[in-house]
Length: 153
Image (cartoon, rainbow, N blue to C red; front, side, top):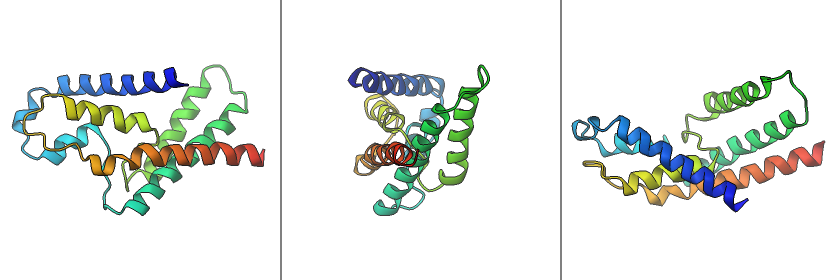
């Protein structure tokens, strides 16, 4: 498990670094630090920690409940990843507007670390006061979602 977690975090960091390189000419031209941060990590539409935590936990609950249900069934060859992708898309479309739906700690933390470490002109802060929500809430929601599926089925 630690190797898997480290690999996800490193993959998210490297992906964010590639995005940084892709937008390299745009960093100086973009004046708003919040817009630059939004390229890397999630942020709430309204900053309200309990509601933001619930949003992330709920999305992660649905993700893990859905993944365990999907894993319990056999699909035609190659269809499983499409079903998982549709689940993630559905979560994003229905619940993503409030917080940007990290639903995976590495998805927010890796790019947020990249934002903090990369030389981005006029980038501002990395909003570490909010960063605990998209890390902790998905863990809580995922554990609850997998436990709920196990208890029900």
